Length: 216
Image (tube, rainbow, N blue to C red; front, side, top):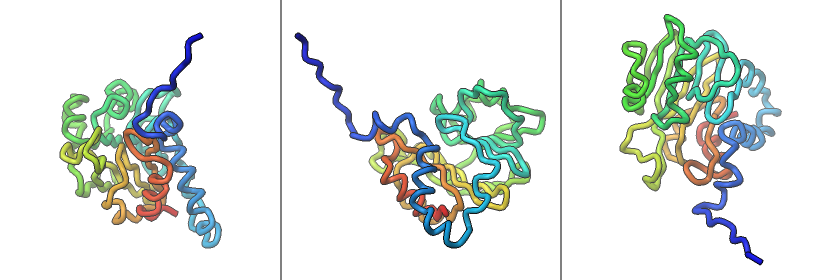
């Protein structure tokens, strides 16, 4: 009889949490901050107009329709006013998904290597970490996104997360990142942070990231 040997994992959280993505991180953040929010009422309406589309794809529909990292869109999506893409990996920077969202006025903000992959001309604004932009009537800030150990998502690549103001609140989409000091300066109302345990954060790190970002 053959004895089955379980696969070795480089980090213990990766297999359990890799499916979860930003939704699970969001739920973890809400649990961590639920007591404070219930006391002061600040959480009212924070998730109105917010929809998780799977993996790292999120849409905000308030004054404008804003997509983060659209990928593998299964439902008929709304036309986008603004598309924000954090880095060029195939499951974040999808030319096919972006094309499904385009209307004549759609603008795309992303880093240079994703812009080259999309090849959509002057629709695309190339961004760098640590800057502020105004596109489609939306104020956008770019936040560094990287692994502190330099693996998978090295800081030198210049990949980003985004902070936008929409529906009267500040939303932080972290992109693929580890727990980094730059999160302490964000002051967001809602944080979408990744849980993976191998390429990004484990649940404890994700909760700390939401706390540092100021999420309610």
